[in-house]
Length: 155
Image (cartoon, rainbow, N blue to C red; front, top):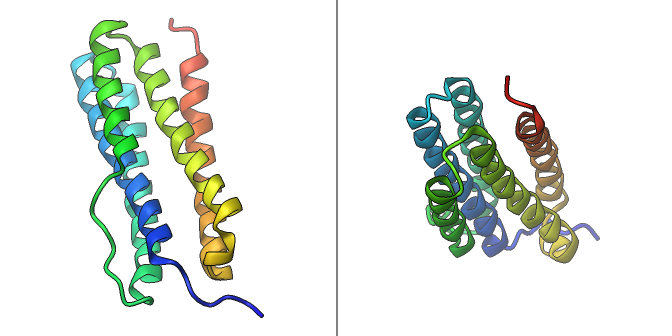
């Protein structure tokens, strides 16, 4: 029998990781502006919009269970943003360091989604699982773009 229920705590964890991603990319936008890396700013802004769309797609799964979607972040995201700030100040104010930090955030996002799809799949409806797979696929494209830019030799 198919599970039509969704554990709202799990969906809210996904909303939190998207909130972390938004906050991380807002920080990256600030750093890119300060470093005059305008070519990266649109990519970072697009990733913010992507996570905002993901959150809007996830909210109904929480509301259907009679709960409220969260607007919080996860502790790991706060640590990521702090690390990104420190890295920008200590390791070097350069394009590579900034993109490397963004890629680490993308890795954390991807791992969270994968973990939930493996460990918590029985607590999610088929519709929710399909939505997570769709979001993970879109995020993987963004991750690959960040990684490709990071690996480019600056001219």
